[in-house]
Image 1 (cartoon, rainbow, N blue to C red):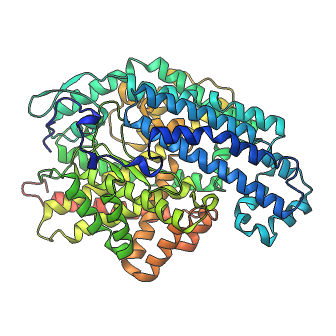
Image 2: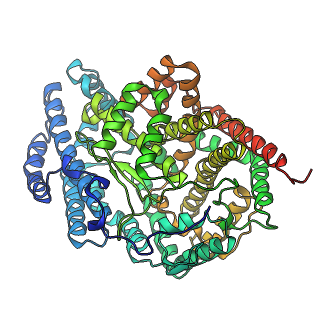
Image 3: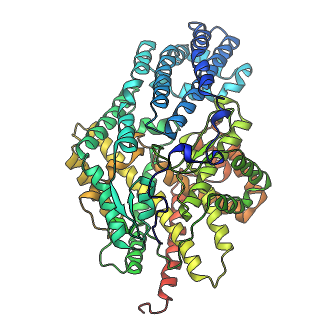
Length: 611
């Protein structure tokens, strides 16, 4: 790949065509409309709190109270989503930042006002609560109420719940501070691309430069990028440590045995699922080493460095994709999901679901998000690589999950749990990979090798590296829970040790040891393991859709439409995947090994290859 940046300077938002920006008017028609709804929160809260001390009066009264509470929560979701999306358009925009701060304060106010609900309901005698949970008049809220019963040991008194709600403002401080540093304040300096152009380095451009075939370009980009974090290493350690201590505090406040169990409790996920993942990946270390050794041989280097892990191994020239070409490719790749799915997604692309290009101050990376009752939207930072094409398919999976769940379920059942969130996105990536392989002739060896290479790198990044992050998170929280300090040296030493385990054969230096300091997901503890379980489940589901056709397609679309109407493991089991066993993880690792074996054979068959 030639890593040449066509536009040396980062564009501002007003330089981007309207059709290449997301349409947030489907949430609020204007900032003034947002302000008007924010002003109405007080009256909604008054209507909800009017039911205080009366929840056990009857099923009718409880139903009215739940309706009022859901009205508040939906309003707060709409307000928060709009504010955060507007902030992510430009994190240097003071008006957007002020809107975000206002909704954060409103969320705390709402949390305090509604803090009575769960403790009051759970204070009812157990038989009375059982009767309410199973009352036909409350059938629409059955899962919500049954899950609340499950939470009984972890819901505190009204006074404590109000205090915890008040502490939400403090609890977000570390994540907000890291986000401000990482997305707004850090400047990475200047580097040169493959053509020798001096450019301003950004996160999105860093990702492009790491795919350069010129190792000097990759090394300069990596060193320059990581030096920005090294310059703030003590701040990063302080923020990370404070975030872990916050997690531990909340777990103790909720009477959970550990922060990990507190995080998994929300989705009713047993710790065995987490442990199975780490154990299965640990057993796969031989194939991990094989793949990295293949990478070393193809690149012709004696020692792999961290900046060698993203460059494509194929000799095929890297194609540059326009955004609109990518849309067509994604839609073609998703045809196994049926005409309705493809038609609905095409309409979404045409209705400005996507904010396409990197602009000054815009949040890095990619995600899909939205508010119930409005179409989902996707944030991209388009650079035209094949990775961007797959990222578009990934975020479209999230968007369609929300689109179908919102259409099929009431607000309180539509929001799917995080554990399911990465399944739909990765199904799309798997289907796109297989589609592109089907479109590539058997004689197009290097093109096929490039697709295998993409899958292998994606699997490594999604399953293996996220499992490494999961092991790191488990260690950091166990350190604090056992009274051990999280010093900069301790964090670096542990992360270096884990790199030896999960990225065998790659040189570990000070920059790599500090890489934990640039992972934003660590401020949302015990989230990342779900990327790995999600990809493992997705490979099983995608293969079923391709091999079994309509019945598997129906089961999969039913999974999307189910939203959060049941626990994630239960919904996955109905769709045909059982993550309470290590089998889906092992199946994914077996697919990875199959691809590595194919790549090894293709490299061995290249002219001039060592025999």
